[in-house]
Amino acid sequence: MSDLENSLNTAFEAYNNHCFDMAEELARDVLTVSPTNGDALYLLGLIAYRAGALEPAEKLLYDAVKLYPKQENYALALASILQKEGRLDEALSFYSKYPQNASAVAQEGYIYLQKGQNDFALSAFQKALSLDQACLTALIGEALVFRKEKRHTEALNQLEKAQEIGSSAELDYQLSVQNRFCQNATKALQYINSALTKEQPAAFYNEKGLILEKLNDFEGAKEAYETAVGVNQYAPDSFANLGNLYLQQKEYRLAEDYYKKALALDETFLNAHHNLAVALCAQGRKAEGLEHYREALLIDKTHIPSLYNLAMVLEETGDYEEAAGLYFNILALKAQPPAVEFRIESTLAALYEQKKEAQKEAIRFAKGWVKHFPNSIVARHTLNAFTHQTEDSKTAAAYAKALYEAFADTYEEKMKDLKAAALNETLDYLNALPEKSLGAVLDLGCGTGLFGAGLSKPFEKLIGVDFSKEMLQKAEQKNVYSALTEKEVLTFLKTDKGFYQYIVAIELSGYLPELESFLSLVRERIAPNGLFIFSIENSASAKSELSPQGRYLYAPKAVEKLLKENNFQVVETKELALRKEGIGDKYASGTLFTVRAV
Image (cartoon, rainbow, N blue to C red; front, top):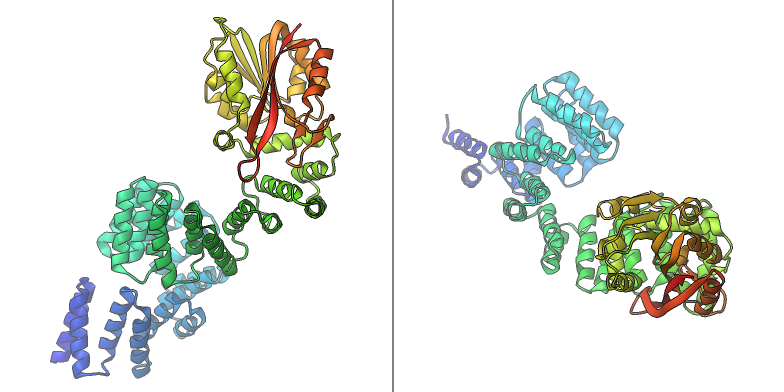
């Protein structure tokens, strides 16, 4: 054996034992003596590829292929790099030269998978398996087709089937990913640790970081991502994952730095643009954030998170027309993130409250909304509000139910942000009463049970009524109500036979098209000398009206007249800034009534 052959054998052995520096040094020594040595060029190409230096790897392998066009392994290694660089058609041209090579045919399947041609991909994997039943690459590829089609159980079964045939670092890696998708993080961690005993590419450390994040191990995830960066400083995913980690920890400046590093490597990295925008907006740098949301949408105009967040930022900065247009784009894509219709409503309401010409534009938007989405209760109610159609009680009730169901999960947090005052005033009043017990208490429109949770005064029973199942589920978790009833308030009052010493209805009147029948029904259910506490949002006119925000407003004097007609005596009225309204420090004006049945 010649000295060159001996050096090359030692170099390949070092490479296989992960002694990459030694392998590179030996291969370069060979090239010094023999500049056209194909194996040395090939090995250096593999080493550069492994380090993430794709351009040098590509050049080395192109030289090897040019010198030795019949060397299959050189051509296939070059095809792999072209595939990694996204030059799929060029890679396919190399793979297709080897129709009897199961691995090459399987890689054709991966290219079709990258192109979104799942049927072609599956056919290629099946052909590869017909050439070699034990082709792990093809077996894994079939599982990836199932994963892409969200058939996660089938994907996991396929990978476990592949385990019966052979083992590899890649198989362990894909088993880790699939178990993570199937919400089995502990098992996923076992597989990725197994993969890392065989090979240590950056992708494996990235996967370990994702799993440790799921297991709430921040430091472990950070270490894994930093190791991934150390292994491959050219992989944008590693930097983006670190950014994601710091974004979750609300360390926005650090997140920003890592997203920018990811984008320096790949300026078309959609999620890095999106998340960088989130980090910038969280720092109050909304103009910069807007720029990156727009960059994300240039890459993918259907990216719902960027459409939604961009619209929200524009809404916050007063660009209501563009914000509304973006929300409508989301609806047109048949994608409805939570409360998107209510974001449209709030945006159009803010537009409506601008100059008179803006009112016409808001009405035009609302009419178009109703035209294109005729079954939308929110659209119909919004148009009613803008055109002062106060009599549509069915739409009002359906709208209120849809609203509270949409915000059930975030209702309590939203109430804190809006600084709602009527609830706290009511609780302060009742908790300070001298009575030892309040007796029977009825909470109309109880929502998530904030009233019951804040009531410290003892009671004989506390009944909560709401028409939102989702809100009542939250109230039930507080374990303070004697009973919770899922029913529309007026229907409950008509059918209930109980009498109550105290009835409360906080922030309920805004969704009632008229108060006369409501007050009459409450009067029938309240015990003699009992107290009824409720809030209204004030109308500037003498009549009730439907505000641009979609709530019914009432004139306090008109309400006092109705109370007298229904045999209620006003004990106390209190004007309140009910809640924050829209952008800035504007508050909705309201009145809290405490009245006694006489």
